[in-house]
Image 1 (cartoon, one colour):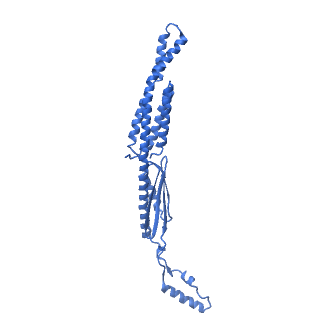
Image 2 (cartoon, rainbow, N blue to C red):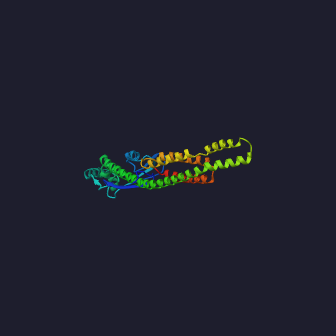
Image 3 (cartoon, rainbow, N blue to C red):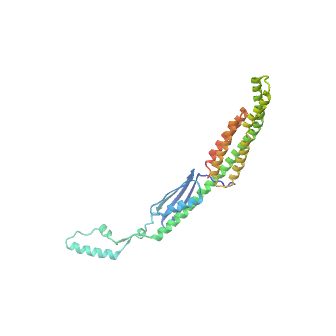
Amino acid sequence: MSDLSGMTGFGRADGSQDGWVWTVEARSVNGRGLEARFRGPPGFDGLERHAKARAQALMSRGQVTVGVQARREADAAGEIAIDQALLDRYLALSLELVERGAEPPRADGLLALRGVLDRPEEDADEDRKARVEAAMAVSIDEALKALVAARKVEGGQLATLIADFLDQIRANVDLAEIEAAAQTEAVRERFTRRMAELAGDTPGVEDKVVVEAAALAARADVREELDRLRAHLESGHQLLGQPPAGRKLDFLMQEFMREANTLCSKSATVELTRVGLALKATIDQLREQVQNVE
């Protein structure tokens, strides 16, 4: 199985801790470099730093988005405790004021006085918050690992496609080599016939024809291009086993196309031109697949 990775994928993880429940989703799409983005619940500021650091550690390319949706469970607020002694003191003071002509106290007013109600879950609890944040961070790790696994699945599929395209390029190169061998003789015969038509029986023309035909054939020689194409094919197969290979494969596609363009420009026969154009079309299709490789 290939170790190649793609850049498109999705991962998810769920978690709960101390009355909080959450879902983490991590997804990625193609990108020239690595760009990590984060969306999370307020109050857990450390999660963004953690998510971006883990994304950078696990992946080298792609636009990665990590989102955390969190909520407190319905019963997480706990029971409301009343400080009865304090309430009794407030009530006694209120009755004294009533005797002096003040309005009788209302229950909601008494309960709103400082210290009467004790809401334990709403009090600052850094230990609890730290535990919840740590648990959310673990879920972020799980979601990112699932994303990486999904990208590897895509990478395996891409490796198969890329290998198939490399085989098609090799077949075109083999065919181009056959056509190029026939091209040299065709160029010589065409040039000789044309010069004979123009020069007739002029003395010394034959020697000049041989020299000029040889020079023309040399300019039409595509053996170097074919040799370089074969070398690029070997590099392509090697890169499939050397991830992350996306940037190197991108560069290799440029080299492939450069040699194919030169081959077409040197072509002197319809047959070799046809092979060259087919070669360029295959390289272009391969380049589209390479754009998805990490």
